[in-house]
Structures are given as C-alpha cells and as structure tokens.
Image (cartoon, each protein chain N blue to C red):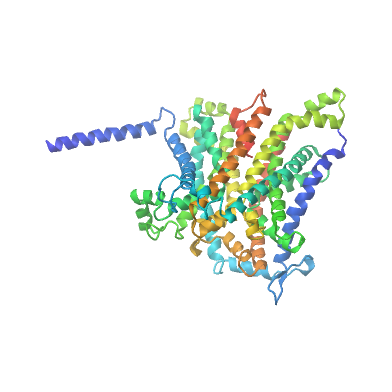
Length: 309
Length: 306
C-alpha cells in the first residue's frame, strides 16, 4: 500500500518535472530556454537597484533589514539626511552643476564637430575623425591620469578644480554627441539642402532653415546623453577633484561604500537615478515630438539604438 | 553650394579642444613617465624633450610586471578577471540578445527598454546595490545561504565562509564585473543579430539544415563582428577598472592593475611610477583599441557610402 502510494507520487512528480522539461526543450516550439534566461537576466539586472532604492526609505540605519517606510534619509534626519548633511547636499549640487555645464559646452562643440567631420574632405579630416573616436575607447583611468597630470604640470593655472572637472567631462562627452548627431546626418543626406539651394537659399540660410531643424531631434538626444554621462561619471571627477568642495555624488557613493554607508547613501544615489531618468524621458519625449510623422526604420528599436550610442 | 572652408571651420573648435585636452594630456603622461623624480620633494619632474628621456622607470615597471615581480600578481589577476568575466558575459549575453532580436515578438519593445535601463543608472549605484545585498545579513547572502550556493562556494574554495561575500573573494569581483559591464555587451550583440537578414536563415532551412546547424553555420558567423566589437568594448574599460574591486571587496587579494595605478595617485608617494604603469597599460590596450577602431572606421565608411 505504502509502496504503491510512493510510486504513484513519484510518477506524478516525474510527469510534472517532465512537463516542465518538455516545455523548455520542446524542439518544435520556440526555443523555450531563451525567454527563461532573458527574463531572469532582466530581473537580475534591475531588481538589485530597486531593492537599493527601497532601502533608501528604510526607517532605521540598516540597509539590510526592512523596518518600515520613512523619508528620514531624504530630509527627516536632522544630521544624516541628504537635505541636512552639508556634504551630501553639496555633492548633489556639484553633480548637477557639472552635468549642466557639460551639456552647455559639449553639445554645441560636438554638433559642429559632427557636421564638420561628416562633410569635411581634405587634409586632416581623416586624422580628426580618428582623434574623435579615441576618447570613446580609452579606459577612464588612463584619461583620468592624463588629465590629472596635464592640470598639475602643464595647465597649472587651472590645477584640479571644478573648472578642470568640467573641461574633463566635456572632453569625453564630445565624442558621444558626435556619434549621435553623425548618425542622424547620414540618414538626412544632402537632398534637402540641395533643394533649398535650388530655391535660392544661401549657405547660411540653408544651414539655419533646413539642416538645423532636421538635426534638432539628435541634438536633444545628445543633450540628454551628455547630462547622463556627466552625472554617471566617477573616475574623471575623482582624478580632477579638489577635495571635499569638488565631491560629486558618485565620489560620495564610492567613499561611503568603502567606509560604513548609511541609507542616506542609497537616498542620494536614488535621487541621481531619478534625475537621470527624468532627463532621458524628457529627451525621449522631445525626440518623439520632433520626429513626428517621420517614417522610422526599425521602429522604437531603431530610435533606441540611436538614442544610446 | 557651401564654401569649401566651412566644414573644416565647423570642426575646428572640437578638434582644437581634443588636441588640447586629449592629446596634450597624453603627452603629459609620457613626459612624467620618462622624467625623473625630485630627490628632495619626491615630486615628479617631467621631461618634455624626447632627447632627455629617462627610460629607467618604464624598464623598472616592466620588470616588476613580469613573472616574479611585485606587480605580477595584479597583472595576472587582471587578465584572469577580464577573461573569465568576458566569457560569462558572452554566455549570458548572447542568448539574451538572440532572444530579443529573434523571438521576443510583442514583448520586444518592453525588453529593449529594460535592456537600456541599466545604462541610465550610475555604475556605482549598481555596485552599491550589490554591497547592500551581499552584506552578511543582506537579502542575497540570505538567499545564497538558503539555496546552499554559499556552502558550495566555500567547499570549492571560492569563498572563505558563507558570510564573507564582501570579504575579498575573487568570485564576487568577477560577478560584479559581469554585472557592471554586461549591458554594454548585449546592446551591440543585439544590434548585430537584429541586422541579420532572415532570408539567409530561410535559405539554410530550405537546404535542409537543422535549427542548430543553421545557428552554427549562419547566425554565429554573421554575428562575429558584433561579438568581437562588444567584447573589445567591455574589455577595454575592464582592464582599467579599479573602482569595482575597491567597492565590492577592498581587499589586497583582489587588486587589479588599475588599483595599482590609482594607489600611486591617491595616497601613494610616486606619481611617476603610476604614470609609467599607465603608459605600459595604454600601450597594451592600444593594440586592442587599434583593432577595434579599424573595425568602426570601416563600418562608418560603409555607412557613409550607402
């Protein structure tokens, strides 16, 4: 009796297991193990960050035991909250300041460089194209060391300062702007400007009234990316840092993680995530408004890949 | 229709900027690495003129990076970490990219958005998330304990004790590197797989190839450039990484070559030596970079011709 019950149970379990296995390895259906891996990957990529954001709202000093919801680490705590701790508040301001300045300088220079490099056919154009690609593939520690040494040994007037940080950020943001704008330039081609010229527009009228409006979506996308890159940057900011006055949010995260982090570190990191996502969503909304009515190749994925790099 | 000087004029501010703030800084590293050190102040004295270069530092650093030298351990570790992380990234990333490009159907847009989200979250924030999870009482530690993974890791010698995920274990650093860099691999892989013309696959199937053989002989070769490009794209920053081991372990048992450089610039006494290691690292990466830039250059030339 008992043996037959046991065997019945194993058969049942076996069939269940077999059904799951059969579903995953079914050679006639779509490959089933692929969606399993993909969705597990997505969960793995995103859930840890969501948990980190959750603990920024923790009611106690712990970042591992949930004790209820509170906004204590944002502004409630009189000493250690992001709002009341001068170091955290200053880092937040510094990060935003760098990101805005980076955007203001890198976008115009990058847009001009993109147009120039895409159309300039002469001595030096090949080398300039090559030079533009280099900041994209240089490991940050190498550019960090290089900028640190140049500001301490050659441009000694500037030394390490907020100004140096801005210059450093702009240097490696320009190339991203160029790549995005150039992609758009290739898809626009020459025909609209040629039509404008046929209709009697001079070169600057054609640039102002034809090319520039067509580039606006790419310019907006690149501005959002410039902002996000600058906010995200750690190495360059750290190497050009002038001490506590130059600390940005990533520097704060780095140093406090190595010491004893409080949930306020999670809070300030979450605020940065919110700012970046806001910039990206705004950029994307504007991008869609300005490209309304255009036939898009590849649908949203085409947009997305252009939006990224 | 446009004056000929216009486009070079447009490029001018950007090119000047990159020369002043990208090329000149590189020369500063070389100058310091080939310079000497002030005997009293211990500060670097750069040598700007190649005729006065002192190659002593570079040869010393090269000797120390060779087997038996003091930097051999970090060098070897860096190579191992990067190689293992690359392998794991491909192992996880390829199926994900393949699924999104081929079979995702209606969920494709959602999956693409999810795929891009990590790009917009600060790298250090993502590391911080894992520091929280892997503390002795953190969710991940509890989960790994519960499922017996910690036990397995301890028994196979990868971990000192079940609670010490943050205590300087190489496995944590490798997994953190995978976690940090994998999004940058999946996107180019996805782009490469998405570009493949479906008629090639149909042709292979019509000629009697099984799905597996179609994958092996059509899809895989056609995505080779994407695989190589993506690998180079994540290997380069990994070779120069120092913040991941710093944040996730902080122990000397996981220092990479980047930590060694960072040490000489933050708290260490000799920037000259740091500059010399930077030059050696850059020379090594230049070979990798040169190959990668050549592929991009070729791709953009084709794009501009089309």
